[in-house]
Amino acid sequence: PGAPVLHSPAVLPMRPDEPGEPLIVSGTVRTTTGDPLPGAALEIWQIDANNVYSGMETSDFEPLNIPNDSTGIPADNLRARIIADADGRYEFRTVMPGTETFGLATDSPLATLTRALQLQGLRPLHIHAIVSADGCLPLTTQIYFDGDPLVASTIEGAIPADAVKTTTRHDDHHARGFDQPYRTLTYDFVLRLTAEGATATPQ
Picture 1 (tube, rainbow, N blue to C red):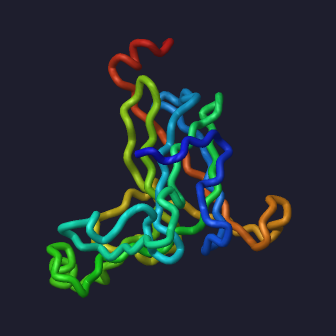
Picture 2 (cartoon, rainbow, N blue to C red; picture 1 turned 120 degrees about the horizontal axis):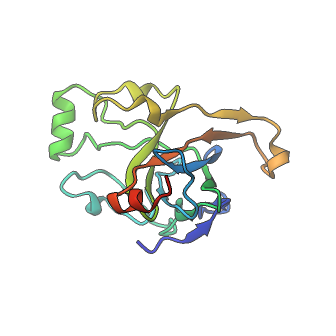
């Protein structure tokens, strides 16, 4: 709540020396019938390259006790509400996320279960997204990354194949104003119309 509202194309709030490999995510928000959704809102948040969520502390994860010390990190770092353009297209610049850990050294219920299952206690790399638009049901999902071995982890069950995306590395970084190589990723979000939204949509 209260994260900055940015219009596409956007740059997520980040520190001047934000660690991590630059990443540009783009795509379209549309309905299940293929119609673009102008002005759709994408609430985006992620862990940073040093494995910390901004604006949260370990106590915020109770009773799971997931370690997270955000001391010195701006509260809205790598968080924003992004508004798609008139064609339902969006683009935002961020960095590749780090790895979320369950803190296996603790005695939380989740850590105990993870140890009992003999799992690593690490989540796959991911970016959180809640996507919404007038006349549609909101979609809560995550973007995962092809090539991440943790995608096959069973800690949270099978990850839908459509949520796992491939990044493309670009060495011509000066073309986009970077001082290092960067990655791009395309992710289209599809929302279901509500009953009222379906009625209001021309057939």
